[in-house]
Image (cartoon, rainbow, N blue to C red; front, side, top):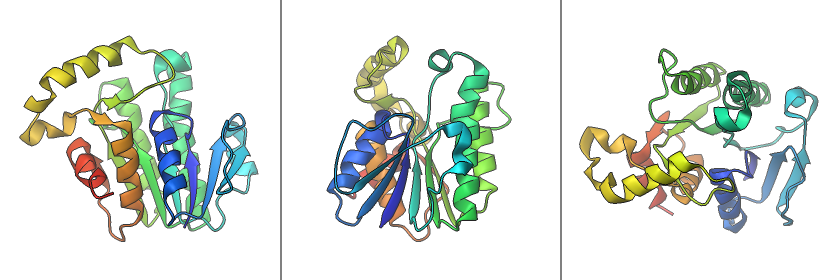
Length: 218
């Protein structure tokens, strides 16, 4: 299989890339980044681009699946507009181009609670992204909606550190209908994405609980 990865330097994206390098079913990986990737492997073709000019690059031809792991925070982005650019406009543009090239599958990381009608800006943005990507009509369009993501981030996030501590102590209480809010490890999400890429008729949405179940299949 040939895969295209967006967001390969982030928490989940970097885990996904490492897992795909070990997976013999994936022979070619197009890794799209802003800056040269600090990793070399015969399976990797690193395409350095200007994300504001996505349409200028011939990225998608012949690919079997697009993995979109793009994501930031308002604090890191600097403004709501800059956050929307990464978490909404770029994934939508990627889906438009993938649809144009008849790519059969696009698997995107979203968030628990994503809702285009939400009063919460973050959740509303994620919901709008899902709605607009889905509208492109890619045959297998899938969104993973994890709760708190656990893993070793490059940057320190106090809120997430506190959240991770709370989840370690009390995460087991999130059962039944609340299981979708469970914290998930970055590698669990990455494993689930790989499993989903092999399914002919996947669900459209996967929450934390179903992500954990899928991750165990690898």
